[in-house]
Image 1 (cartoon, rainbow, N blue to C red):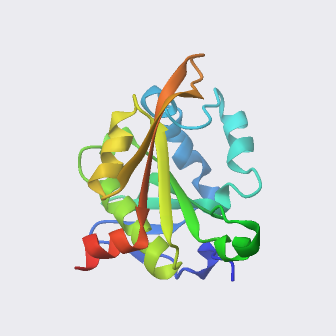
Image 2: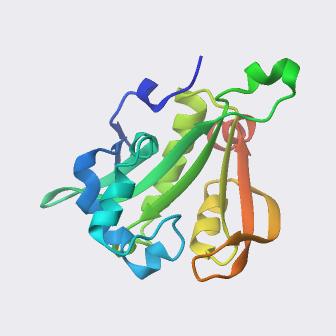
Image 3: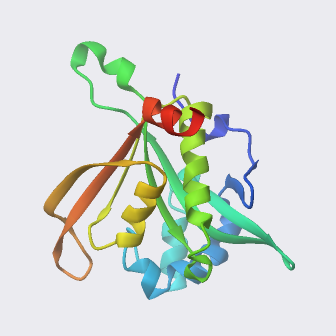
Length: 197
């Protein structure tokens, strides 16, 4: 059976957050912070205008793997970030390749800098890890970033992910420079030991 975000009972609440599926109506809320230099420095795509962003936001499949992270304010619910949860196949030899289908996830995220330093990203990503291992029954979760993106790899470390590799000049940044990258991962057993022991 193929794991899917549709299997999860949304929304999910944590101590301070509500996590739910991203919807088209979140377009402007996500644009409001993804257009900021501090954010688009590191995210995969950095469109320079709203119309281009809208086209990319609505691309087939993209919205289906993003989770909206929101808080309650006196003015109502406010989206403060998103976490990508991309379910994928692990590598397997031909004879067992079917057993490697949809057993792994890749995470990515972007958060509004206005809300940084308050632990919201850590709380959100910790909960997404729980979703991966408990609700979706995945066996492994990975995340990658440029080594210069310290806030991102520090977040990976705070939630208990382990650095698996440091790749030299492995990714082309939009500045035109080839930058080093880090790869982090967590296995279900590691998550269980950290969060359930």
